[in-house]
Amino acid sequence: MATRTVRIGSSHGLHARPAKLFAQAAKDSGVPVTIAKGDGKPVNAASILGVIALGIEQGDEVTLTAEGDGGDGVLDTLEQLLVTDHDAA
Image: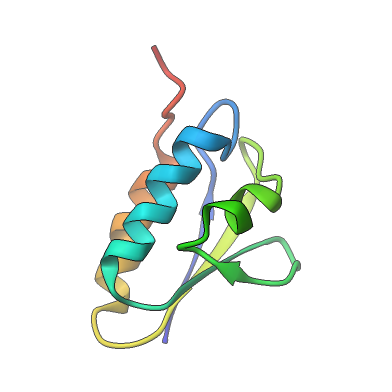
C-alpha cells in the first residue's frame, strides 16, 4: 500500500472541474485509491461526489492511499493533479 500527503494547489479548491479530473484519473488508474481530508474518513477517490463532499479548499492537506501494484506511480499522477492550480487563467 502506498500513501502520500498532498497540499491542494487549485485556488478554488477541489470543486467540480478539478474534482472531475482527479476522480477520472483515479478511476482510470485501475488501482483502488482513497482520499481523506485531515483526520477525516477516507472516501473512494474515483467517486466525484465523494471527493466534492469532502469540501477540500486551497492549501488543505489530503492523504491519498493506493493499494496494489503500481500504487506509487498512480499517486505520482494524482499528486500532480492536486498540486496544479486548475483555476489559473
